[in-house]
Amino acid sequence: GQNIDQPTEMTATEGAIVQINCTYQTSGFNGLFWYQQHAGEAPTFLSYNVLDGLEEKGRFSSFLSRSKGYSYLLLKELQMKDSASYLCAVRGGYNTDKLIFGTGTRLQVFP
Amino acid sequence: EAGVTQFPSHSVIEKGQTVTLRCDPISGHDNLYWYRRVMGKEIKFLLHFVKESKQDESGMPNNRFLAERTGGTYSTLKVQPAELEDSGVYFCASSQDQGFSGYTFGSGTRLTVV
Image (spheres, one colour):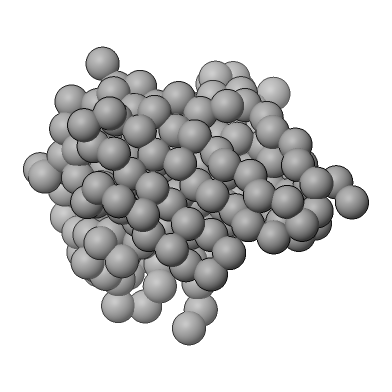
Protein backbone atom coordinates (compact mmCIF):
# COMPACT_ATOMS: atom_id res chain seq x y z
CA GLY A 1 0.00 0.00 0.00
CA GLN A 2 0.90 3.68 0.02
CA ASN A 3 1.85 5.21 3.35
CA ILE A 4 3.39 8.52 4.37
CA ASP A 5 4.14 9.06 8.06
CA GLN A 6 5.00 12.30 9.81
CA PRO A 7 4.50 13.51 13.38
CA THR A 8 1.15 15.10 14.08
CA GLU A 9 2.38 18.03 16.13
CA MET A 10 5.63 19.69 17.12
CA THR A 11 6.50 22.73 19.17
CA ALA A 12 9.61 24.89 19.12
CA THR A 13 10.92 28.21 20.33
CA GLU A 14 11.52 31.31 18.24
CA GLY A 15 15.10 31.37 16.96
CA ALA A 16 15.58 27.63 17.37
CA ILE A 17 16.01 24.86 14.79
CA VAL A 18 13.38 22.18 14.18
CA GLN A 19 13.49 19.01 12.08
CA ILE A 20 10.29 17.48 10.76
CA ASN A 21 10.66 13.87 9.67
CA CYS A 22 8.76 12.01 7.00
CA THR A 23 8.94 8.33 6.16
CA TYR A 24 7.25 6.82 3.17
CA GLN A 25 6.35 3.47 1.67
CA THR A 26 5.02 3.79 -1.84
CA SER A 27 4.79 1.47 -4.82
CA GLY A 28 6.88 3.92 -6.85
CA PHE A 29 8.88 7.07 -6.29
CA ASN A 30 9.46 10.09 -8.48
CA GLY A 31 10.17 12.87 -6.06
CA LEU A 32 9.23 14.15 -2.63
CA PHE A 33 7.71 17.56 -1.92
CA TRP A 34 7.34 19.65 1.19
CA TYR A 35 4.54 22.19 1.46
CA GLN A 36 3.70 24.76 4.12
CA GLN A 37 0.07 25.47 4.87
CA HIS A 38 -1.31 28.17 7.13
CA ALA A 39 -4.85 27.60 8.36
CA GLY A 40 -7.42 28.39 5.69
CA GLU A 41 -4.80 29.11 3.06
CA ALA A 42 -3.31 27.30 0.08
CA PRO A 43 -0.46 24.84 0.60
CA THR A 44 2.71 26.66 -0.50
CA PHE A 45 5.58 24.83 -2.21
CA LEU A 46 8.76 24.72 -0.12
CA SER A 47 11.04 22.10 -1.65
CA TYR A 48 11.44 19.19 -4.02
CA ASN A 49 13.90 16.30 -3.68
CA VAL A 50 14.32 13.55 -6.23
CA LEU A 51 17.95 12.58 -5.61
CA ASP A 52 19.54 11.66 -2.30
CA GLY A 53 21.03 14.48 -0.33
CA LEU A 54 20.35 17.90 1.08
CA GLU A 55 18.67 20.79 -0.72
CA GLU A 56 19.11 24.15 0.97
CA LYS A 57 16.93 27.16 0.35
CA GLY A 58 17.43 30.01 2.78
CA ARG A 59 16.24 29.07 6.27
CA PHE A 60 14.69 25.85 4.98
CA SER A 61 16.52 22.68 3.97
CA SER A 62 15.19 19.32 2.90
CA PHE A 63 16.95 15.96 2.94
CA LEU A 64 16.14 12.73 1.14
CA SER A 65 17.34 9.13 1.48
CA ARG A 66 15.60 6.97 -1.08
CA SER A 67 17.07 3.73 0.25
CA LYS A 68 15.59 4.44 3.68
CA GLY A 69 12.34 5.94 2.44
CA TYR A 70 13.07 8.97 4.59
CA SER A 71 13.06 12.71 4.32
CA TYR A 72 13.26 15.62 6.71
CA LEU A 73 12.54 19.32 6.54
CA LEU A 74 14.89 21.48 8.59
CA LEU A 75 13.78 24.94 9.62
CA LYS A 76 16.42 27.27 11.06
CA GLU A 77 16.11 30.57 12.93
CA LEU A 78 12.46 29.91 13.59
CA GLN A 79 10.07 32.83 13.40
CA MET A 80 6.54 33.12 14.72
CA LYS A 81 5.22 33.15 11.16
CA ASP A 82 6.62 29.62 10.69
CA SER A 83 3.74 28.31 12.82
CA ALA A 84 1.84 26.29 10.23
CA SER A 85 1.22 22.76 9.00
CA TYR A 86 3.99 21.12 7.00
CA LEU A 87 2.94 18.55 4.45
CA CYS A 88 5.16 15.80 3.08
CA ALA A 89 4.05 14.44 -0.30
CA VAL A 90 5.47 11.79 -2.62
CA ARG A 91 4.92 11.59 -6.34
CA GLY A 92 4.23 7.93 -6.71
CA GLY A 93 5.96 6.94 -9.95
CA TYR A 94 7.01 7.77 -13.48
CA ASN A 95 3.64 6.96 -14.97
CA THR A 96 1.64 9.03 -12.56
CA ASP A 97 1.57 12.67 -11.68
CA LYS A 98 -0.45 12.41 -8.49
CA LEU A 99 0.89 13.32 -5.07
CA ILE A 100 0.43 11.08 -2.04
CA PHE A 101 0.26 13.19 1.09
CA GLY A 102 0.96 12.58 4.73
CA THR A 103 -1.49 13.98 7.25
CA GLY A 104 0.81 16.92 7.94
CA THR A 105 2.76 18.16 10.94
CA ARG A 106 1.36 21.12 12.83
CA LEU A 107 4.26 23.23 14.09
CA GLN A 108 3.73 25.80 16.81
CA VAL A 109 6.48 28.33 17.42
CA PHE A 110 6.48 30.02 20.81
CA PRO A 111 8.23 33.27 21.77
CA GLU B 1 1.18 36.30 -11.91
CA ALA B 2 -2.20 35.44 -10.44
CA GLY B 3 -2.31 32.24 -8.45
CA VAL B 4 -4.78 29.38 -8.60
CA THR B 5 -8.23 30.69 -7.82
CA GLN B 6 -11.06 28.63 -6.41
CA PHE B 7 -14.63 29.55 -5.66
CA PRO B 8 -16.67 29.52 -3.71
CA SER B 9 -14.39 29.53 -0.69
CA HIS B 10 -17.16 28.00 1.40
CA SER B 11 -20.34 26.16 0.53
CA VAL B 12 -22.99 24.70 2.82
CA ILE B 13 -25.60 22.54 1.14
CA GLU B 14 -28.16 19.98 2.17
CA LYS B 15 -27.77 16.29 1.49
CA GLY B 16 -29.16 15.50 -1.94
CA GLN B 17 -28.45 18.90 -3.43
CA THR B 18 -25.98 19.69 -6.18
CA VAL B 19 -22.86 21.80 -5.83
CA THR B 20 -20.39 22.95 -8.45
CA LEU B 21 -16.90 24.00 -7.52
CA ARG B 22 -14.74 26.04 -9.87
CA CYS B 23 -10.99 26.28 -10.29
CA ASP B 24 -9.07 28.79 -12.41
CA PRO B 25 -5.47 27.59 -12.81
CA ILE B 26 -2.48 29.78 -13.47
CA SER B 27 -2.65 31.00 -17.04
CA GLY B 28 -0.66 28.74 -19.35
CA HIS B 29 -0.63 25.76 -17.00
CA ASP B 30 -1.80 22.76 -18.98
CA ASN B 31 -1.90 20.47 -15.94
CA LEU B 32 -4.77 20.83 -13.48
CA TYR B 33 -5.41 18.62 -10.47
CA TRP B 34 -8.21 18.19 -7.98
CA TYR B 35 -7.54 16.98 -4.44
CA ARG B 36 -9.75 16.60 -1.38
CA ARG B 37 -9.11 16.65 2.34
CA VAL B 38 -11.71 15.05 4.53
CA MET B 39 -11.65 16.13 8.20
CA GLY B 40 -8.78 14.55 10.08
CA LYS B 41 -7.42 12.76 7.03
CA GLU B 42 -4.68 13.44 4.54
CA ILE B 43 -5.13 15.30 1.27
CA LYS B 44 -6.08 12.79 -1.41
CA PHE B 45 -5.82 12.95 -5.17
CA LEU B 46 -9.03 13.00 -7.20
CA LEU B 47 -8.02 13.59 -10.81
CA HIS B 48 -5.62 15.18 -13.26
CA PHE B 49 -6.35 17.08 -16.47
CA VAL B 50 -3.87 17.79 -19.22
CA LYS B 51 -5.51 20.61 -21.10
CA GLU B 52 -9.08 19.43 -21.57
CA SER B 53 -8.34 15.70 -21.33
CA LYS B 54 -8.61 13.58 -18.21
CA GLN B 55 -5.17 12.06 -17.76
CA ASP B 56 -5.91 10.22 -14.53
CA GLU B 57 -9.23 10.01 -12.71
CA SER B 58 -8.33 7.08 -10.47
CA GLY B 59 -9.08 9.04 -7.29
CA MET B 60 -12.66 10.00 -8.08
CA PRO B 61 -14.74 8.40 -5.32
CA ASN B 62 -17.85 7.51 -7.33
CA ASN B 63 -20.07 8.59 -10.19
CA ARG B 64 -21.67 11.36 -8.17
CA PHE B 65 -18.55 13.39 -8.95
CA LEU B 66 -18.13 14.91 -12.39
CA ALA B 67 -15.13 17.01 -13.40
CA GLU B 68 -14.88 19.00 -16.58
CA ARG B 69 -12.35 21.29 -18.19
CA THR B 70 -13.90 22.47 -21.40
CA GLY B 71 -11.49 24.51 -23.49
CA GLY B 72 -8.58 23.54 -21.31
CA THR B 73 -8.80 26.62 -19.09
CA TYR B 74 -10.88 26.59 -15.93
CA SER B 75 -12.30 23.40 -14.43
CA THR B 76 -15.46 22.56 -12.56
CA LEU B 77 -16.15 19.75 -10.15
CA LYS B 78 -19.81 18.90 -9.67
CA VAL B 79 -21.15 16.76 -6.87
CA GLN B 80 -24.63 15.46 -7.53
CA PRO B 81 -26.35 14.44 -5.32
CA ALA B 82 -24.18 15.44 -2.37
CA GLU B 83 -23.84 13.09 0.59
CA LEU B 84 -22.68 13.82 4.13
CA GLU B 85 -19.33 12.09 3.56
CA ASP B 86 -18.54 14.51 0.73
CA SER B 87 -17.84 17.23 3.28
CA GLY B 88 -14.26 18.41 3.24
CA VAL B 89 -11.90 20.86 1.63
CA TYR B 90 -11.48 20.55 -2.13
CA PHE B 91 -8.17 21.81 -3.46
CA CYS B 92 -7.19 22.56 -6.99
CA ALA B 93 -3.58 22.73 -8.18
CA SER B 94 -1.90 23.49 -11.46
CA SER B 95 1.54 23.04 -12.99
CA GLN B 96 3.16 23.75 -16.32
CA ASP B 97 5.60 20.85 -16.42
CA GLN B 98 3.91 18.02 -14.56
CA GLY B 99 5.09 19.35 -11.27
CA PHE B 100 8.84 19.24 -11.71
CA SER B 101 9.00 22.86 -10.63
CA GLY B 102 6.26 22.40 -8.07
CA TYR B 103 2.52 22.38 -8.04
CA THR B 104 0.68 25.60 -7.17
CA PHE B 105 -2.38 25.06 -5.01
CA GLY B 106 -5.47 27.15 -4.55
CA SER B 107 -6.88 28.01 -1.13
CA GLY B 108 -9.56 25.39 -1.47
CA THR B 109 -13.33 25.23 -1.22
CA ARG B 110 -14.66 24.11 2.13
CA LEU B 111 -17.78 22.06 1.43
CA THR B 112 -20.16 21.19 4.22
CA VAL B 113 -23.04 18.85 3.51
CA VAL B 114 -25.73 18.90 6.21
